[in-house]
Image (cartoon, rainbow, N blue to C red; front, side, top):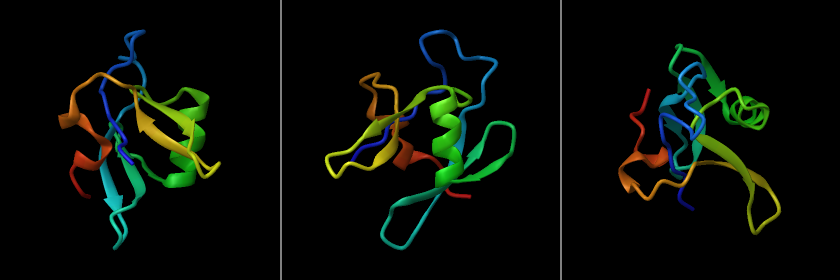
Length: 88
């Protein structure tokens, strides 16, 4: 599953945080994120903030399995995929 990242959302988003780094488990699944302000959020915390609109450039969506996931706002640029974020 692709999870895209874009530093700004359509409304500008300059005053909101973005994800700047990620940590993955041994299977390559995203487990936590570092924000542009330096905060570290586990996946559940990050998902809650995405749902609240605190994080720019991402959204929450319901997967085929019925679970809710984080993905980047579609912009057609695969280089800013969440999987491409640097590890921390």
